[in-house]
Structure formats: C-alpha cells, structure tokens
Length: 556
RNA sequence: GGCGAGGUAGCUCAGUUGGUUAGAGCAUCGGAUUCAUAACCCGAAGGUCAGGAGUUCAAAUCUCCUUCUCGCUACCA
Image 1 (cartoon, protein in one colour):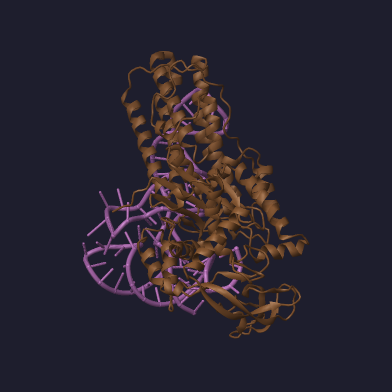
Image 2 (cartoon, chains in turn blue, yellow):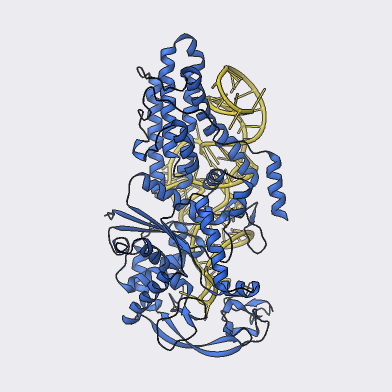
C-alpha cells in the first residue's frame, strides 16, 4: 500500500564550509535535487528545498589556525562564496542557511535536551588523546603512529591505509599529534552516546521497509546492520571549543558531534523561513522527506539521523535517499588537496553565462549508478553537438523561418496531417517519460529525453520541408510552422528544471510569460498572430583552444 | 583484512522479475538535404557483457572462484 503525501521536503547535503564548491558537488547532489524540486514546483506541488553550510567540526578549526584567523572568519568566507555560487548556478533553495546561526544553535540544543529528557543517551567515560600544545582533544584521524599490525609508521589513528586495518588511536605505537607534531597525552573525558546497539531492531525495521532504495544505499545500510556485532553506540558529543555547546551544566569545552548537529540544520533552516508553520513539514505524516546526498554520507542520513528522529518521536523519517556515487575528473579522483578539481566560482569567470552548459553536461554524466568521469573534451562535445546542434539549432531555424515567412507573427494552423498528429503524439509520450524518470530519480534519462524533444522537432522539419513547400503550398507551411513553434514552447517548459537560464531565454524569445508543466504537451500555447521576438543564439560553439587552456590550467 | 557498490561498443553510459538478433548518445564511415550556428535528417559499421567454472530449455542478469576500480569500516566530514 503506497503512502500518500501532499507535501515534499527536499534537502541537499550541507556542504562543509572549509573550501569552495567544485563540479563533483554539483553533479552528485545539488543539480539532481534542483531538477527534482523545479519539476515539482512547475507542477504546483507543495515542496520545500532546504540546504545550508555545515560550519562546525575540527577541520574548520585547523584551517583557521593555519591561516591565523578565527573559525568564524573561515566559515563566513566560504558560506558567502558557496551561497553565491549556488545562486549563480540557479540552484533554487527556498533557504540556504548555516549551522553557525543562532536559530540553529537553539534548535540543535532543544533537540539534544529532548533526547536527554527521554533518557535516550548513555553516558560513558573514555581515555582520549590530548594535545597539550594545541590545547585540545584529538580525533583519531589527527593522530599518526606505527601500525601494530604491519608496522607502517604513517598509520592514522582510525585506520592504517597500508594494511587496511581499522584501528583505535590507543592501538598506535608512538602516537604523534598531526596538529603540533608532539606526543599527545591521555586524558579522561565523558561523552553522551546514542545507543545505536539498543536501537538496532527499530532501525532494522525502518531500513527493511525501504528495500526499494537504490542498491548502493540499501546495501550499505544492510552492511552496517548485519556487520558481525551490529550497530555500536556512537558519541554525540566532542571535546572542542567550536560547535554547538552541549546544553548540560558544567560541561565546558564540550560541543555536539558535527553529524549530530548538521542534519538538524535541515530543521533549523526550515524554521528560519517558516517560524510558524515549519512543523507542517517536519512533523506531518503527509510529508515526503527526501535527502539528496553523496555516497560518502549514506550512514548518517539513513541510520544515525533517522535514529535521532525516531527517538525524538515528533518527527517524520526520510522516505527516500537518492545518494549518488562520485564524479571523477579526466580519469582521476577529484582532490581538493591536490587541486585536481574544477571550481565552480572559477568556471563562472571562465565561462560567463554558460551555467546551463555545465548543468546539462553534468546531468548527462551524473553518477547515478556508478562513479562517472568528466572530461573537458566531452564537455565541449556535449555543447557543440547537442546543445548547439540539436536544441539551439532547432529553435533557431524555427524562429528564423517564422520571421522570414511571416515577419515574426505566428501563423494559424489548418487541418492536421498524419505526420503532424504523429509528431505531437511522440512529443506527448516523451514528456510522460520525462515525468516518470524524474519521479524515479533518473535525472540522466530525463535530461536525455528532453533533448529528444528537440530531435523530434528537427526531424519534423526535415520531413515536412517547409522551405520547399513555401513555393507550392504556403497554406500547409503555416500549419507546419505553427506546430514547430508550439514544440519550441514545449521545450521552454520542459527544459526549465534542467536548463533554467535557457528556458527563460526561450520564453523571452517567444515573448510569453513562463508556463507551468501542465502546458507542456499543449499545441495552442502560442496563439495565432502572436508576435515573437527575433532569434538569438541559445548556445555558442566552444573552440578547441578554450578546452586546451582548461586542461592546461588543471595540470598547473 | 571485513562489508557494500561497480567492471557492458573507440568514448560516456542504459539494460526493471533470467526469455527474440544486448541498447542510447557522442565519435567514425556512407547517403540525402540547404530553412538553420558547416548545423539538421536517413543509414551502416562497431560488443567473447572483466576472466573462469556451474545451475538452466535459456544467463549481461542467478551461484561459486579469480581479478581490477570506488566507497564504508563506527572520533575526518
């Protein structure tokens, strides 16, 4: 029995505010979520799209120390940059918030207090390494030493990358803090744990109800649940001076674990824009909650956050988690530290007003089922051979012909011939496929089908040959050109989720106010005698030289 | 090491519960065309489905083994 929903709450993973955004972020998470939300909004659905910067955690404090500024200055810088990047790429969040905001701190603390009141947490003491010079406790990741198994002297406190063994920092021989290079000391500390072990049956039941999730997501959840010892308690607090303070008396220097506070950021961002009605989304069983993320955070969104929500008891649980795999770049993993990335804010400078080209390219190679690869050559080919040659060209030849034959006034249709009805029918069928694909989170397929509508248009013109008929049967040409312009209007409507800037240009060229999805298969959207604007190019060719420069830039 | 996901045409990727001759886009080659940004349209060629064994009337699909890539491995986010 499928559940019925009347609201959709879409979240996109909170990007971590210690660096700029690159194409992998866009392809993996923000583009698919934006397409999905734009589609629902075009269909007049009640949908809310939430995101924000994740501004806590150790890496930010380390970056601040390195650059000799405060953590707040670090997050201010990247929050501003990321927000502006999203806006420029047309990622249309209803709210792009941040976890350093007052409302977030309050919301996260309230959430924590509720779990405290319900006695959800278990409290445990443990010995943790402490760096006297840096004056802070060290996460396992920030300690290196000699692996007890393979004697590799560059093993991390959580894992030895040489032999692959999972480690505990206490196992390391000759531990060294990566912050100061000194030997850390052991200190006792108390933390509040989410007892995932006790919650395992509830979580397992929840996951089992969602065997329809994508293979990578469901598989990873099962792997956590069915791991030899099952789920283990996880500390929800950390010893750090940067983060949301734990709302318990006499706990100085203790903040919430980033993965406790970050997903609550989705809630606080909703509260921020809907102070009175946010509960109608988060605490309403009629709401479909969807988390768009990358494969690296499956466990947090499918196990830990749902566990938190279950124990709070007032919230709905995620209904679907479309996690994408990773995007590679020119055959290699994207790496921030090696500067092997295409930074979005730089793309905007190098390719002004070409956001849709990147949106399109990334959508065609979205890593929906497996890691995929971005190459500049492919980017150029998608632009030149598809956007310019198929979509741009169809629109251009249609608009040019209408100006040539009718001075830009849309001609009236006469009787439809078989080819007309067939063409209209195949456009309708393609639209249905797009809808079906989007609703099933298959954005790559949906995007390809959108391009197929332009192909149908090109084929229609090639087969009807209005440039020949104009000499023998001008009445017939009127019908053909009318249908061609209606298809152009369809393209304006259905391209909006994928190519919002192009869609806007198309509506402007057609000189009509933007239409919603319900009009997509209409054949009377542009009325007879309506005056359209002059043709202008939607896309321009990209030369080899431009691509060579970008490839050169990567290698620097 | 353990677990999960993947390996399909030159390239980038689809292949739903096993079922006609394994698909698409791009690239390549050929044809047609001139309204259009030398674009469009039609057609052809291109695959031992990572490798091996097994189950079955039938395997890209199910099972086992080998191998490669990516992720997770519980205090990185």
